[in-house]
Image 1: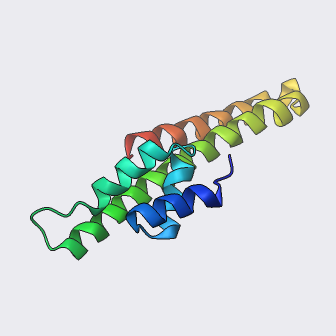
Image 2: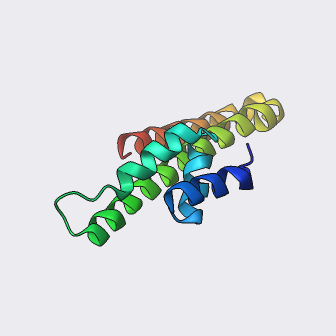
Length: 116
């Protein structure tokens, strides 16, 4: 789903958040402005710590979440590709190769999920 420039401008004008972070948050929340604004407010609500340090940590945490989600999505995409494109080509004599590859992809997905 493509993020609209109007959404970014609206949030930027109303709250002053960085454009790149608004764009990433909108993509992460599938263009849901309410969820995006809520998360950005949480990131920029510096309480107790030096504001710049708190905001930097909050942005890093959110970007790690985004990267984690992208990794999970890529694992799902690879698995789907294997099932749709490689599976029909594998002969019965080479079934173990396909099976091992699928198992490795599944294990990688589990590791990513555990470390998220």
